[in-house]
Image (tube, rainbow, N blue to C red; front, side):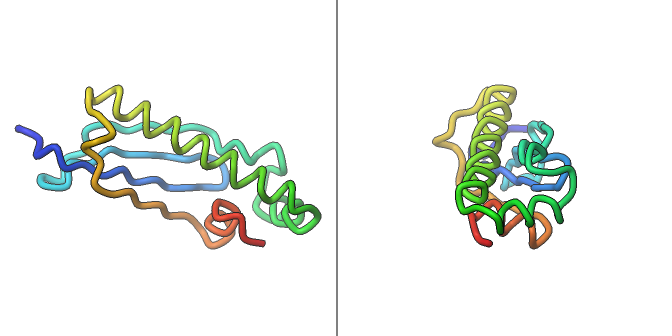
Length: 109
């Protein structure tokens, strides 16, 4: 099946793990999948501890956002490398997670 070269990356930002898939948007085919531990774990194993840390310090909040941003970029590159594709072929990115994980990703208290 020939790829349209119109690709999207979907991320699921979980409390424990971040998973990512590279999708051919024309066919719906998943071309690559990767995952990693959520690096925010250093601020607490559960979402309540992370929210407490974020409320204690703006620096902690920004660091949590930065950690997930760095990990999603790393996972995106891993997907592209695995599929032999280039970032120029990416036409969209979707991020999903529970409300707390989305707030921490965006650097919102």
